Length: 156
View 1 (cartoon, rainbow, N blue to C red):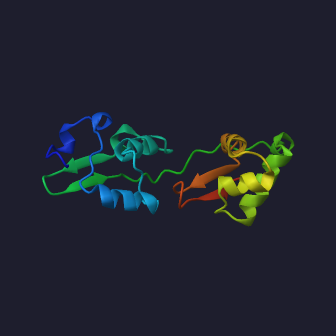
View 2: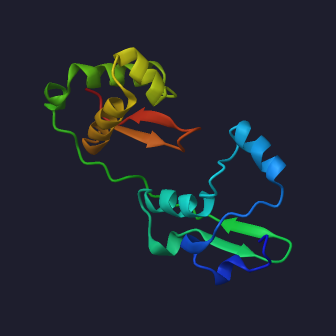
């Protein structure tokens, strides 16, 4: 830690971001390798908590010494619990949601902005459709926001 404190003795929600090298931090932010706002530790905790199969004993652990910083993120081998999708799901899906499914079939790496362009609606509308499809157990996101992919669980 920049100020010499040990992270394991602090509340993660109260840890502020202090940069040792602001020039390097700015370059890394411009290359889109990091954010400037210093939300990493809280974000790691929140993103992990949102995963299927999360348990309190799997929460990320942070440890520091005067010269090192260590983050431990535990893996869960549990697959998400998916309810069977009723056979009438296709009747419940809108035309746009079916287009989104077709886009995922064509390219599991398709992004929300790309879906937005191809469906002609704003990204927030695509996100709502994706949330609906996920809630119905039709699709799931595997991996992270940047390097993940979509998987169709139940064929329409």
